[in-house]
Length: 83
Image 1 (cartoon, helix red, strand yellow):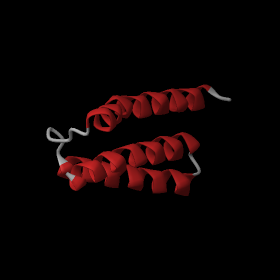
Image 2: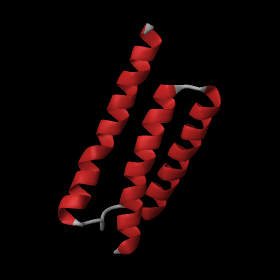
Image 3: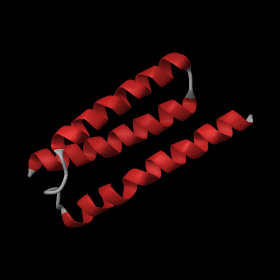
């Protein structure tokens, strides 16, 4: 594995890990009052587009990171819209 790929996977780990506390808080408390539905909808769209870009380029760190982050952000948006 080359050094650039290691950096890509470390960046992926950081990106995914950054969403986990917010998801955990929403799961635990159900509180989404302070969350902007528009911002998260835009975030989900961005992650989905990055996932497609990664697929088109065959870049696994981009694909994995953005697909997982899209799912985590999508969960938050759905919880927000249900309230």
